[in-house]
Image (cartoon, rainbow, N blue to C red):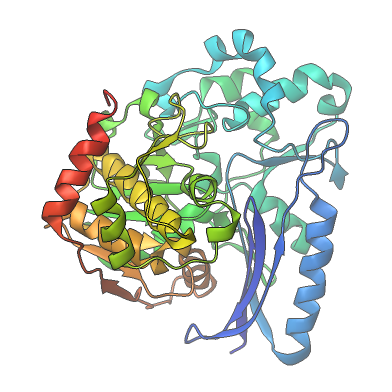
Length: 440
């Protein structure tokens, strides 16, 4: 039947993974993505990623028949194309220079009741990127024929087909109204809406290449497919931690807490809260602790020491982004203790986000931190008696992409395991101490 290949272009790394019909990994390669710090502004190295992906696809094709290629990519990113070439380099969403036009942009863009897209820093609102590029490079912007969202850019590079897919369009862009299922006033009035190609489903094919999907939504889709209408929350982990809660009304969302609506592959709005957990983990742990795998016992030793990591350690997003992070108290010695402290911190922030959402039903941890025992066990203790499950799949994005490759015939069910709980009494004391340090 051939294999499915997932091209997963994340913010800090990219992965090419081939899997068979059973989900077994046949091939995998990774690369680190580095921003090009050169004029005209910090931008993503599209050609380096493309060359790396093509070389990997050739290696896969030498040993396996490729039945499908599924692009998956991070949000807040688009390629401006003029005909068959980039009109401008693909801007890095962390470039803070785009905020220089905020006095003009914000009154035009901010419409949270309709877009469910809060004001975010730097270029995390895609509309701000477009507005800045239009202002600073008017001649180049005027030549743009197509605005391609990041997964669909890679679909185009591999197939020649241009399309727009809803999960990236509805990802805090200021360009979409999730409940109305229509472009926002900003997108229409600026003339941008007409430059997006036709909206297509994530599973639409051109040859072997699918239209593709936003990364967190790929993780969510597997559970959405298998759980029907029951409420649940997926915690998609990586550079960003995105809590996607099915069954939560949009009225629970508060823009000032970095809460927003994403849009799933069916076009339905999903209440979300998020923070830059992977980046914060790296900041707390430091280089010598990044390879440590902290256990529940390590986390309990940190709690006993009363050491606290207080938010936040990445100003790009999250409910505490206006606070400066710090560590209080004396940690047990060694890099594993810092890894345990960081894991506890992530569990506390995730728990707070789930409280903000009023999340019901199972909580499923997807992505790299699903194998972090200290994080998962701490979260299980904090949420008790609400069930917390850890994904056993190679990655949520890969599983979601594989489901798309077999659409609509896939009957795959996500593989999860229940997380054990750290002592809830000790955690409750630790959480009260952590929350008391700020007026949340």
